[in-house]
Length: 181
Ligand SMILES: Nc1nc2c(c(=O)[nH]1)N[C@H]1C(S)=C(S)[C@@H](COP(=O)(O)O)O[C@H]1N2
Ligand SMILES: [Mo]
Image (cartoon, rainbow, N blue to C red; front, side, top):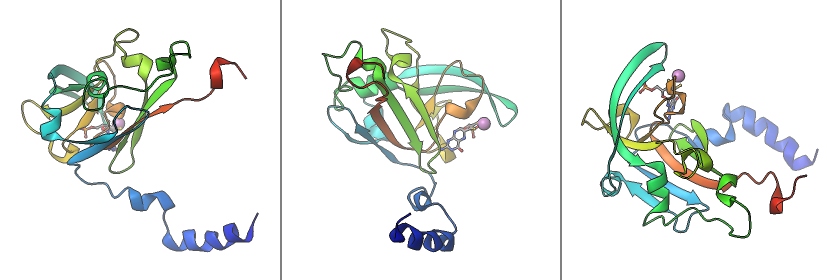
């Protein structure tokens, strides 16, 4: 182990937190970034989400042991990523079904995270109506922030990332250049 790493240990213990925690204060979000392998990375707020064709989902799921039924309005994650201004997930046309290599990592202000495979919500493949919801029962989402993920059909609410801070598109990268390891 190098000396610099040894010096870092008491510093981290002194902070009493993981180094990442400073970037994850939690709290109610009012915008999120879209980053990574998209044509145009950018920032979205509520009025920008409202520009898209609205999607609706009536969802019944378990949240912390109780059954919750809600009627969400939002934009389909596929539509958000594949229309202007984001303009699409970047894929390599020389890689067979490169879209199936892509993962979408959604992170909340508290750094709660869930990952989705692009293939599960690409309308040509899974077609899941995964949504970036901005209203429930016609009202804003309150403590869940201006936007949260909703996955119709999920039995528990764990993937319904609230207070979205970032939507990042990456390549799973397990098998570079189409060839198995
Ligand atoms: N940002 C963030 N989103 C989150 C969580 C969290 O801890 N942080 N918990 C998840 C879990 S485990 C559940 S069950 C639901 C609960 O959503 P609710 O508070 O609207 O019922 O939110 C999900 N989304
Ligand atoms: Mo949960």
